[in-house]
Image (cartoon, rainbow, N blue to C red; front, top):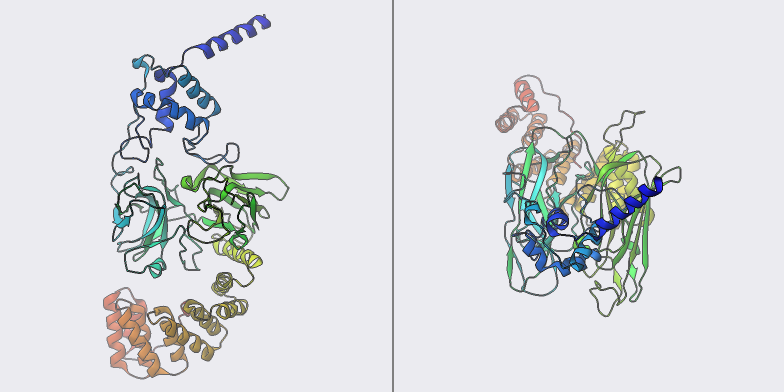
Length: 599
């Protein structure tokens, strides 16, 4: 009986395999789910795939690109990370398409064809709470190499808001291949423009961030066919008045000049951020020096986690010589957990990948990056023919090797430490010093983090080294002044604050710290002059008026002090410092309130 049952199953399977395949019954569900999101009017696909006629017209081409796994574009190798929204055909689906094409691509019974998918036109998440756009359009030449352009988009919010989702509308999707969005709280990208509002070129962009906030910890990415990502509950991120958004866009010429002016839709929530992810970057760009003709150049990096983390997402990045990209973690017990493996890297299809379930990595796990580069003439993506020596850089003809991980540090149950991002950031910077002993950014960051954690004695030598490496950096000079104040060396601190202001005349934080240092030294006239300059620069800052008013009180100039306290209260009626000092002005001399130096 068992033999007869097995034979029956075999015959049924054989009959099923030999049954004619049809678009209506077998192929349409595959195409509609995996191809139609991009292959429809207004999207990136060069032709629509919404009807049988559409698919029949391109059937041999579809069989070819799916068999080669060129389409649909999904870079990660199966079995090396379980990702949400995976758009990857199974081996069985690929065979089904190839067999259907070999059979002549028959339609079958039209009544069996599922309804084509319906797509939301316009904003995919509905009307945004705020729409912002680039100040000016960028002109893309009719021909030539791909262009990577950075659009600076000011944000017009009157108060701090929490953002639960971002929808990027990059413009004509035939032109914009993919885009990254960054939050620039320090307006650092503006310094890279040659003209205000014009943006600037570059395949990669570096954004300066306040060291009290290691990074915003989110991947804000757009690629064709992908739905906007909505942050999970508790992960909404902060957007402050005056912040800039910087959109790094990959643009491809179309044969005629094009204008590109992206817009961004922001969706707010009243629920505050409760979880603070962080972006961990592995890299060893200093080792990128690839000889011409080298077909397997390896770059590696290994970072030991100082705490437990959950890994939420991954974003690998390289340029055109990247070939095999691997990222994995080795647990303390020796077990390997794969984070991602891309056997045939194509930067045109790069993206951020969110895991279906977060990956827990305990303290002591080693995160590893192994990137292989092909600088031979056989690499069809090599932008240099004949090949030439390639080193690191942010232009398309340079190279990079970055493995970004979005991680959520676990609280320390023993010490009740909740937000541990600064602790993780310091570990990353110390790891960077192991690779680059003379690195300015690492010395600066460790010094700032140590100072923020009230350890000025350890911070001071780090910051002094940073100033020695880059003596013309105003932020380093200001930070050194703050560290000197913390260890009681006010006279030396004044010289550092003066240097910072000389290097950047509009550096308000350094001028503020200089004014306070001058006041501590009894140089009241110079301090008042500095505070007056700050009031001109920041006319809506109540704290500056509070401090200048207190300085006038020290000199017995009560009328001037009262006027400043009144101005501060007009700006901020809830300013308790100004209110208390104003109330005490007619009576006894008020005690001044110590305020730490601004970093």
